[in-house]
Length: 147
Image 1 (cartoon, rainbow, N blue to C red):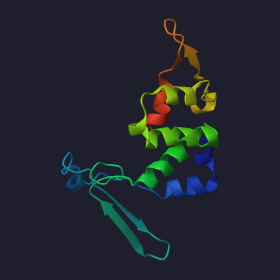
Image 2 (tube, rainbow, N blue to C red):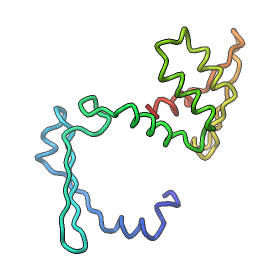
Image 3 (cartoon, one colour):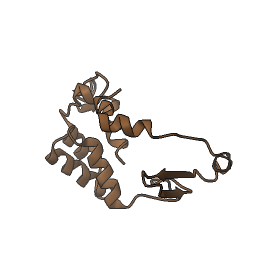
């Protein structure tokens, strides 16, 4: 368990949470992927919210600002601000790019710290035939997961 989950305020909150499958919601899958949350406050008030489609689903897409915020939250502490800005600039303007060589240059030498990648440091290495930098398979996954 990550250390943050052991914080007393988080443990207390976790002890207050119960999860249940609602057969009526389950029956809507795969046409919808509904979810509902109900919260009972200490004073007895109840708060509730529901959605038919999770945020990020094609039927409930993220806005561009939300995509950028999600990307930044994922790469925060992994890439420096300059590299992040260059990655975002490339991604947001990909339709104007002639090829992915520019992105390869941005990522050249990029290393994912061990604590961010289950003990595997990722580096770019030259391809045996072309000599061009080739990134380890999981480095693009870090960025794919941020979009």
